[in-house]
Image (cartoon, rainbow over all chains, first blue to last red; front, side, top):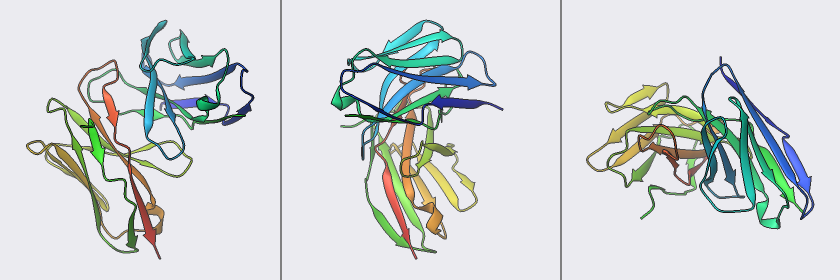
Amino acid sequence: SQTIHQWPATLVQPVGSPLSLECTVEGTSNPNLYWYRQAAGRGLQLLFYSVGIGQISSEVPQNLSASRPQDRQFILSSKKLLLSDSGFYLCAWRVRTANSPLHFGNGTRLTVT
Amino acid sequence: RKEVEQDPGPFNVPEGATVAFNCTYSNSASQSFFWYRQDCRKEPKLLMSVYSSGNEDGRFTAQLNRASQYISLLIRDSKLSDSATYLCVVNGGDTGRRALTFGSGTRLQVQP
């Protein structure tokens, strides 16, 4: 069966520090991968998606970046965090068919102080 | 108009009640539909897909009305454990990019 791992679960970082969140998927090949952010009490905002190694599409301009160095690995990064980067970050995957649902990792709760 | 709209609630219902949520979508070409459940401070989890003919999973029934462009979720015999936010998700049919559009969610609070 397929599983998705995301870490760390919680993170507290000072403003201006770098960020690296990692996500890996097991049990499937060539998944579509996604990074979402959810601010407190708000809906899900799509940040990045990837349809293959090295292929990253950004949905919202910001100081974050994403990379996909391997088929089942997706990384979210920032060189300098802002207070507004605080939120709940969710990695997700789906099979590359038109009507497949998303499956989420457990999420990372980031607080920028 | 938002692509996917939901009443944010909260819907406060007693245990054992039947409650229904609607979700409207703007893209008439949308191809697939889902309901997710999100508990407080947790990730969304797939509750059920929504099929054209409607489908049922235990106490949960999902319906699709393409003509009016809405989907619904009916919960019968509500349990305290049903308290959560329910997210409506619409798939525009693209296999790659931001095909899945999330509603902002409807909060359900089941009370004893």
